[in-house]
Length: 430
Ligand code: HDL
Ligand code: ZN
Image (cartoon, rainbow, N blue to C red; front, side, top):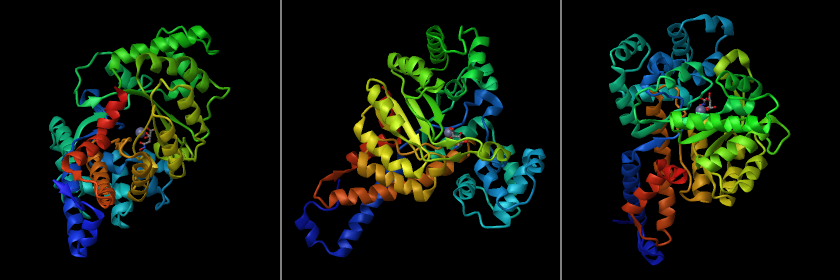
């Protein structure tokens, strides 16, 4: 079916009512396609249920999500230590009272809790917490995983897998039977950002490495990466980097990137995901909620992409101010694939701005979103909220396209949405 206007003359001949009904028709089609197209969630902190209590779910985990903890501390004079001594339910009660009872839950993280509960068919309101808790207690995990993935319309969830997490490593060492809906991403932060500590771990695991990062050490790091590639079959390697990240630099990060990680990516064909702009522990008293952001100097990314045009890079950046630069670097280097609205950019006002910018500078050659979910239930709200924004944005862009007389079809819209929701990422990784 064609949408809109077949020529300027046709457009000129249409009444304003006809134009708006044509837009409404287009909006309806875009909505149907975006809502019905399963997405690949390419970055989360969720786990295959085989990893046990590493997979977080349920209302208390949602309420003590570090986004909400940070917001709750703004409106309480409770000492940090007192809060951290509470058990999870007591922490959740405090957050519920502070952010939902004592004030309207208007923030994106608060709204998200309510969207997820609402889509699960649960009543929300002042005294609903006990009933909501009871409902979650009654959910078998296996069916709840499917229910959340269905409500978020996800076909796969990519985990963040760290060899340096002892609880997770123990499970991998038992060669677990996996849920194939959960894909893997090999997380390298300790290796690239804290070689002193990471080197000790590698040594204890039988890799002949030294703190001076000799050539033989770098070969051993490559052997370590190959071993984990065999063990977990990752879609990509990943590292989060501070806004001060520079490359090349006279530091261990550059040395390990240059001598180990990039050669490994070149040989294996696996992309390296760079998540740039996080300032860790700006307020350590907030624990996981204590990280901040900074505007990064993306010359480092430009250098990496320019020096290694036979290596694939994925990138998302934390600062709103870096977004246009990132898109322009993406225009210069086809070995760079831009993805998602990460963390502090994952709010409607910035998702809208960033995704519009990306469509205007990159067409559909990027991945629109990832959830970054830490609690399984969150995928419901994170994907519902983002899809709403995508629908309105794409309707705008397809309207502009139609106004040129371009014959837009359902098939073209479906192809584009497939691309933006994971097929483009999979194509890039192949
Ligand atoms: O480094 C990361 O992958 C970030 O996403 C952090 O995990 C952060 O705490 C987070 O969950 N953001 O959404
Ligand atoms: Zn993350």
